[in-house]
Length: 448
Picture 1 (cartoon, helix red, strand yellow):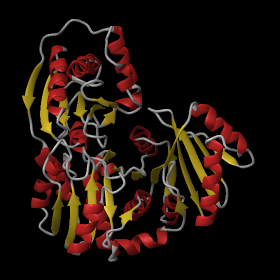
Picture 2 (tube, rainbow, N blue to C red; picture 1 turned 90 degrees about the vertical axis):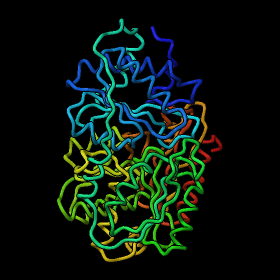
Picture 3 (cartoon, rainbow, N blue to C red; picture 1 turned 90 degrees about the horizontal axis):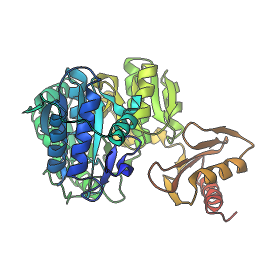
Picture 4 (cartoon, helix red, strand yellow; picture 1 turned 120 degrees about the horizontal axis):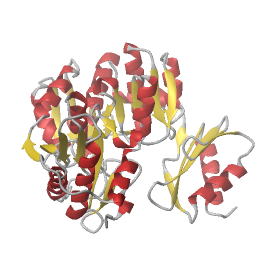
């Protein structure tokens, strides 16, 4: 039976502080367990890639040792973005893929993401639960036949991105955040002579000295905003540590809420093909309203890439977007690629012939609280208490609790990893937002 700290298993991936929670010994056991699982999958090698974190080479090497001990053939992709690993898993005859990354988490963390052939994530079919069970039961003796080879698939990925690149001339600012996207971007920009780019934090550095791996963190986009304004760029884009998220600022350096990007890109996809657009339950009402106006079918989903991708496949959707800056396209096998989203937004700008700020303006119909976190002793009990307070109106339990009134609505859901509840409120005007947010805050904190 494993001595592994199973608390590092989360809803969508494995993640923990290095080296006390996730270390080489743990990574080796996990690699060995993945090898056992992969024997049930389609035949082929197991891909392994890593981001630029300081601990990623050690963790990746340990994962590969575990895979080889299990008899797996391993393809070491080196430093890559998560979308690149998923892209290759979708196009090549592989058994599985392991991405060593903690995505947007602080530098002292690391983690693992898993995918099967076809870019199907493990959690979609209970794979993380099965992985945990394999580790809990105990691993069998090592098997023969394991081996490691190296391969660089970045040229294949870049060629695909270039095929979907926009026409027209663009001047943009790009902040890689010292993350893995900075490895791909020079190759991509070298093949896009029509895109002039101001480059920020392209150097791969696992300590993330530029602005940290999380572009959603308050103040993270200040450098990007300043460059956009001073250089006269049409827009700016920032990527997270493993390159699957993209955050945008307009030509004035104003940060664009990801909801509005979902609405814009959804509308752009619907101009090519009608169908379902999937969005997460925190998203502004402007998203489904925009999708309906464009002739599409809005489909709401629980939060998280596993649920979004599953809904897209079930609905044969044409686009998906999350408030966290993840965007999903069928052309990418529903992989959430920040680079692909960036190119599609440039296409939308060229087609509309307007600055980004003007495209966003009609979408700024409602006011939002942003996500508010509350430490509570019992998240489930807190949610039930709030539900009892709002029994006079429509409620949904799709992901936590969603309550909708004509003038305002909110979603309250538990954290997957901490004793927290997360609150999002939206209203037709700022006065209503302030009063309802204060009301909910008092209820959650037990002051009412």
